[in-house]
Length: 209
Figure 1: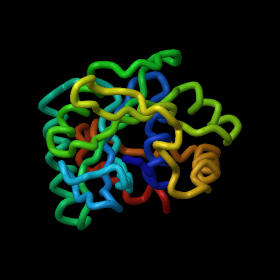
Figure 2 (figure 1 turned 135 degrees about the horizontal axis):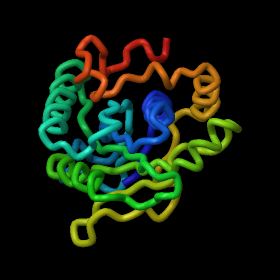
Figure 3 (figure 1 turned 135 degrees about the vertical axis):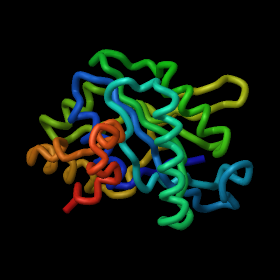
């Protein structure tokens, strides 16, 4: 199974992490399976690609609050299943609070486990804060460092090679760098913000205008 991330999802999750540099953040990955015979669940095969089309920023504070997580997942699934044909939740992303922390902690593992119950090829993207910061300064390196997939017997494992996750558009880093220079990360709304003020839209419709 291969994984591909769109420019929209890539830029949005990076901006979410950059907005809350001193906090752990997480979010949901939305996409579809293409190629092979895959249509989700047990149907996926080695010739399939999980295309991550979009993401939804979730939290930047209390990441482990189960009621809020369940509410967010329900709303996200309902929205994309009814408004975007063929799209569903395919994974999650996570950035640790500490700059030098590269471990996949219990919270993203639990969220990934929950998603994997409905989509067996679910993935977790763990952002590397140092690479993200260097991107903000130089506009060169990718914002994510590790792709994790779930093995039924060994749990969440780091993918063996960088080729397992590719950018759908080669211009993604350039676009992200331009947005960072504009300070556009301050415009990102996550589900935490929405719960504090329901007028704030967690779909971020104006982020790329």
